[in-house]
Image (cartoon, rainbow, N blue to C red; front, side, top):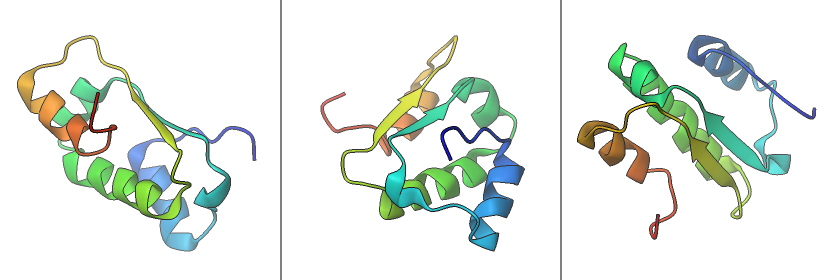
Length: 85
């Protein structure tokens, strides 16, 4: 698979079914991070990102895009971005 795009619910569904192998993953991208986290998807996003980080390659690049980056978004993002970000 070259590109996989999905809502948090759909991504979790594929993860639970074992439909996706994270070993070949090169990038994990979260768009509209502030909106997603503000709408109550925090736990789902943490689950997805933690699973990707645990089962994906060590050199995985995580990208998070947001129009605004309030402190609470920065705190959550810091859990999944490289320490020196």
